[in-house]
Image (cartoon, rainbow, N blue to C red; front, side, top):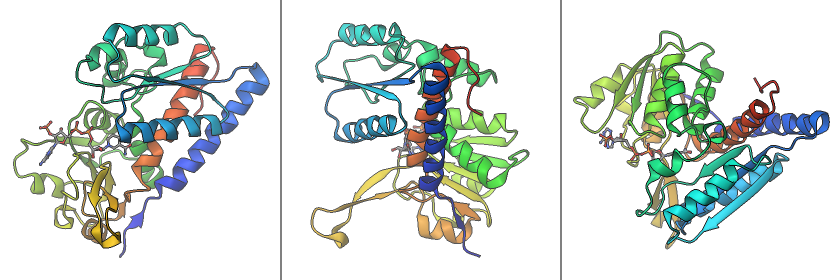
Length: 296
Ligand code: NDP
């Protein structure tokens, strides 16, 4: 039977609709407008696209959007000052520093200078610790989006075998924490994992967050398993015309879809959910800052 295609684009639109409704209520009932500030250092083209898209969707949801575009040569002190000002600005509830940062800036130092309650990316060490100990935190957007799609598809994830391929701080590790929180039996695989194919073959849920185009072939997938493809890889696509490119994930879509019970496409799967979760986190941060009930 053909795999169910998990439509992240449609799901994200639904989440954004809920966010917009919540924002409208915050404005109407409390006179509060949630505000998100995005800080971009340098001119990385992919980062510029993400930042534009985040700003646009923030405004569409009725929120205040602030963008700080800083020169690639910006000093650490100047960047920390921008963050400090945003930390102290009561109209800003969420702060996101677009990664990666230019090499001369200490990413950990910068992220840990964001007020944890405004850290809508969930990368601050306090939020990492809170998530790891099962306490209320800001949850990283990409893994949160993956979890929402899994819960929506399966209902309960309790007792399922999950394999997360990739152990980065922004995707793999928090994804594993979230799956553990939902009572999956979790394996984290990485570049040193032995017999990766056999490890993946045990999984009811496979989350691929590797950054290697189409690395996971269909014969690694247990029949009926759910495949969440986090990867975003741009490849040349001469078949579409000269100079054209295409996006592919970290799994080989056709062969994995033939084996899986459900799968997320690239594009249109995890990607749109990430920004929707960022907006949702900003509303959550705003509600917490004002002592109001959080969205479900
Ligand atoms: P990183 O490069 O930080 O981490 C990649 C992980 O994959 C590492 O843990 C690495 O292992 C592991 N890995 C590399 N090669 C192999 C291999 N051959 N076998 C098994 N594991 C391997 O990437 P990110 O986590 O930041 O991103 C992963 C992917 O997700 C990328 O394609 C990225 O573009 C995409 N992404 C998508 C987002 C979205 O919104 N959809 C958001 C963020 C990322 P080791 O630790 O041993 O080196």
